[in-house]
Image (cartoon, rainbow, N blue to C red; front, side, top):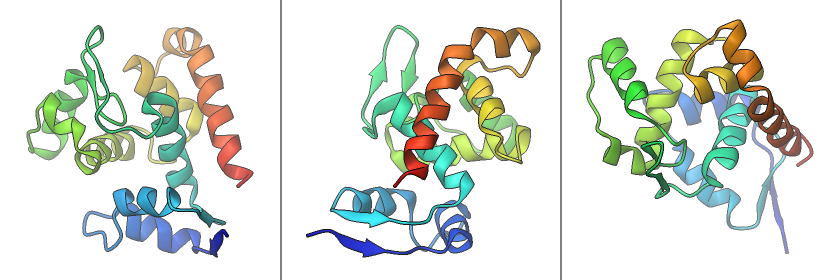
Length: 156
């Protein structure tokens, strides 16, 4: 029997993605894995979840050795270098195997470069590391996959 829970989008975005979160994203994913259907998610949470689904299928221990990409969001060293520049905090690639740290790095960078959380721009930046015309062309298939993941979440 499925349980139904309604979460107000504003509450989700405040609780899940604010620095002093009361409900971590990890707990939210655990809730989603235990037969509870979330009927409302904020746009920011849907974008994040879509990319997590696309990058790792929700598994935080994934390592792509050929690309040196780690964790639930497949974070690379260039991400960590930029995160350190923006926040003065330092993580290493193995830290990205921790779901919460990986999400912290991702959201800090996206909040800085794409504060509107435009999915096309976020997918382009996440996949290529750039927001240029050339990068948009090069990431066309990846962006299409990200949009499809997002649409699946809208249909929950």
